[in-house]
Image (tube, rainbow, N blue to C red):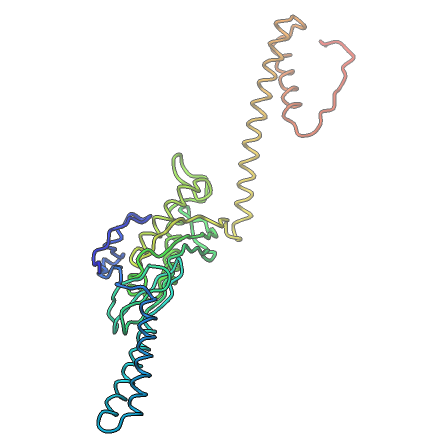
Amino acid sequence: MHDDVTPQESVGGSPRGEPVGHAGTRVEIAERSARVRNGGIGILAGLVAIGASIGLLAGADSTTGALSPVLGVLGVLVMLLAFVLFASVTVISPGETKVVQLFGRYVGTVRRTGLVMTPLLTTRRRVSVRVRNFETSELKVNDADGNPVNIAAIVVWQVTDTARATFAVESFQGFVEVQSEAALRHVATSHPYDNADTGEATLRGSTDQVSDELAHEVAARVVIAGVEVVEARISHLAYAPEIAQAMLQRQQAGAIIAAREKIVEGAVTMVDGALRRLEEESIVELDDERKAAMVSNLLVVLCGEARATPVINAGSLYT
């Protein structure tokens, strides 16, 4: 039996050997291997015990005198032993383990798959070590700027220490779900939704950074339950309905301003190029007043949303 467990680093960076909860409570129990044998030996021994029991009971019926009760008692005891042997045999599928207890004391965990025989008079509890995932409920929290947002996340996790998952918490699955939602709230309140300062992470723009931070936050909270977080991702993110329309208008205004800046920049470049070409090729000579009028007209045509209507001047250029 191996009592030492090699520490294993989880996503949160806490050693698997000595998890410490947020309240500072150290969990002493750790997974170790249970001593098991091939299940075929247990079945064979049980069959032999049944045969011996039948022989003893038959001998008790055919024997007279003081030996008959003794043979009968031995036959019953051997039959009970056969039942105990059969009860110690179990089947373990891939991705599953059995946590073994002897009169309430933790004996060890069986990770060996197939037909196995555990120590006699022990009880077994099935614990799956397959990778699992779940989506948190949609939470309504305030971001770093105080704006209410609706957010949800998908957490991928698996049990790495079956002893802690069984004995350290009441229900490790419920524990992971509650702690994941608490971690999601903490991460969501630490970052603004968008429009952050330079270099500041946002919930909408820094998806990978926020997901990595969420994974480490969840891992640090659930390590006490012997659980390792494989991945955590934001699955839903939006402003709360009461401010969604106002935020949409703000985003639209920002997009319009950015588009107008591009349009004006392009129009100025085109007007500058037109004036330079007119001067270089001596197509027409314009004084400052005429240049200003031309620039104004070109900017109106290039920047205006409505289609321009030309006005033909049939008279002289100068009054």
